[in-house]
Length: 629
Ligand code: ADP
Ligand code: MG
Image (tube, rainbow, N blue to C red; front, side, top):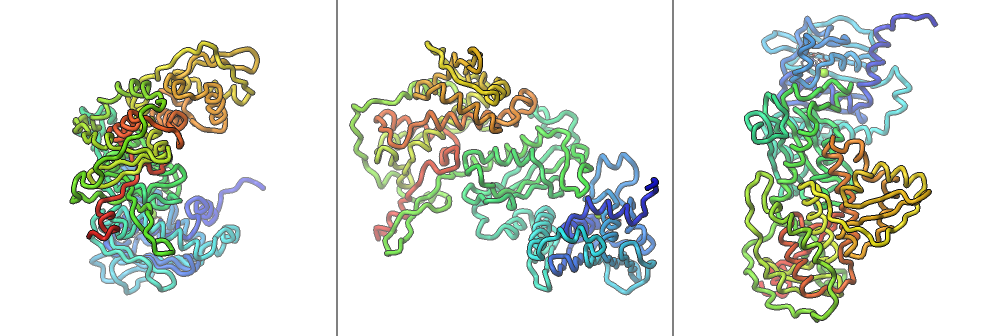
């Protein structure tokens, strides 16, 4: 075949291949246009999952009759005019290819009337076929109808899923756009049935609750965070010369609201719903230890940046952006979410339900705020202590390691001193049950602590404070007799990749003949808790080989977030190994120590794996169950 210029139809269809993947992409483009046109109400009507019809009606500024033809041409837009404009895109659209692409793969009809005009204009296209612009009587604003998507591209049509599935994508798209544009009214119907009906003029919180469900409102913790602008001097992490402060507004869902998929995560940057691995990482980090690793927190995160700080021209379907300072935005989101989560007591509540026989049985219910009208200390007078002669577990090392980190933990991120936790009373009144649980009290009722989960959480938080927040290495001790570990090529590569991490942990590994490594020094903390160096290193290398502690080395010193994630992962592993186990008998001193530590750390209510460490039976519940109220 000789070289030839492609026909306009083919050019547009090729563009459509990137921009229009499915009916939901059509919805996104048309709603984007309506929002760019300043609409206050947008109606989306869909038939057969959008495969037969997508109709979007808006009350925006409209398209002048003289520009209707141009609007459907490729590379035709009213939103950018010169190269510099690309640096400060303030609209959702700017590529000028959506309508042309859609028209090339469907039967399209657009009707529009500009305010003040006596009549509107109509244009129709089928592929590229179609007539001119005709006058028509209609209301103000624009209606775009797209029928029979991919009717002329059978290969694409084959990839469409069932109407139900396609409708799911459409609904998701509309909800994401509605979340960011709270003031705009949205209506979505499928085959004539209204699914979503959101009034205009809503506030951000109100809109979020309308979309996520009223019953969740209590579990949504609002937050706001800002860096840069006038505050740049106080915050060295803000990028220099930032025109406008970078802001994030959002809602942190309580851990109990976490979902099995990422669908309930709403992330937008300057009003655009986007996917961003860097910020997804920030969300995961904020919830590290509060939810299981395979769950997704329910969050709404809206980032607002000076347009010069984001490049929106990186993805044809506009679903990704690139940040000039990704680290700054990561920190912004992470801090916002963390603060929100720290502001609330997340101790899950143990309540009572009834079993099949009608007996009251304790059940774990989602987190509820503590009721403060309970009589302080009224319930448990004194728990008998266990026999104090038992052999103690070595807590001394932990205590010493941690004592240094302590003062730091009493400052919040703004450097404000926090009240030193009081209430050692709980530690003085504790009972170990079945060598696995610790029962004690606080002002609101009875606390039941999972000793392994809590100790693991305590270790994790403290190790984190020392190694990550303060950047110190772990104290280690030289082994009298080095432990020799067998390595294969896979482990050897992992050992090289993880060298930086191993060093941060205070571990010394040396080559020891062919396919062997010698462990010369090992963290005192692990050693004293009886963790076997050889087995630990083998596990570390095997996990590294399987992809754990990812990217840490490549970015060591560069991308703080990656390093932090890798360190957190390994500290997680260490805490689990070093923590007391279920079945370990604890001395009085250890019990008291553990409970005291519980009061002094953040996020003590869940272990690093997201299981709760502590359940609370409130006095109210007990009174109810005993028929006293
Ligand atoms: P882009 O949005 O990237 O500019 P489109 O192909 O989506 O490209 O739209 C082309 C042009 O048509 C827009 O720049 C805008 O001027 C006009 N337009 C499209 N939809 C609407 C609408 N609903 N209301 C007003 N003008 C619109
Ligand atoms: Mg557009």
